[in-house]
Amino acid sequence: MKLKIRHLTRYRYARPLRAALQNLCLTPRDTAAQRIVEWRLDASGRLQPHTDAWGNPGHLMQVEAGARELRCEASGIVETLGEPVEIDRLGPDPHVYLAPSALAGSDVAMRRDLAERGAAAPRDEAGALALAALVAQQVAYCRGRTDATTSAVQAWAGGEGVCQDQAHAFIAACRALGVPARYVSGYFHTEGAGELASHAWAQVCPQPDLRRWIGVDITHGCLVDERHVQLAVGPDYAACSPIRGVRSGGGGEQLLVQVEIGPVMPSP
Image: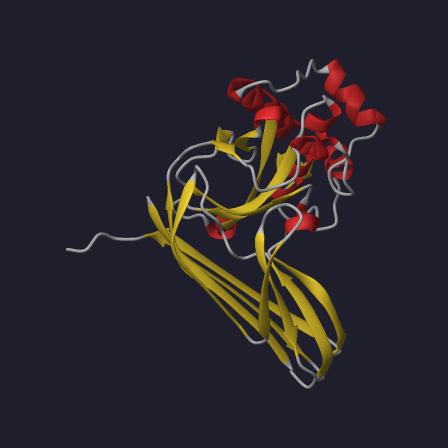
């Protein structure tokens, strides 16, 4: 399936900026699950391409003093292939993803819960889905109860969260069970997707030496399929969020984000 995507982000400031530097993880790459047909990145600042430590293509955007607005629009067409398994040779050794991160670590209570509920280390696709189902039962999907700084431990204890929290809880559970796992930011297409046009899921690597990653969507209880478009991967959301950065000046800030995704209709 070919999907057309438009992702607009606009920051408006009450006063002129003195300086701003943003890191943009808004450029997907070809994988076993997707092929990039075309992609364009337009921004209000100068763009410097780079590849980060996790193997993601990205850009640094530098904005000069005096600006009152930051604007970035990513758009293009991605052909999704419906393949949940990816052999990734660009990123670091998968064993790196065994270490807990700030948003995707576990505590004693969480590890005790996993043991009491008979959670098993995911060794294949079926095992990944089984653990995803357990996590979704514990962290029910509910908007407005968490934010971008909520950790897996907090979401697990609170019992509610959004796709980001469910992904973090799944990743933390995998790591607690001795299996590398990582966070995936991207897009999800379905009729009436609404706020889920921007989405998050996880990849687990039961065979680190083979670099074989299995994509699993905890929110929808499925493996990655043609509805998913991968943007970036990392230990957790903080490492691969679509846009993050620092600024000096500007005063108050207003943020607008618009994400549109839909199938490319065949020519008549």
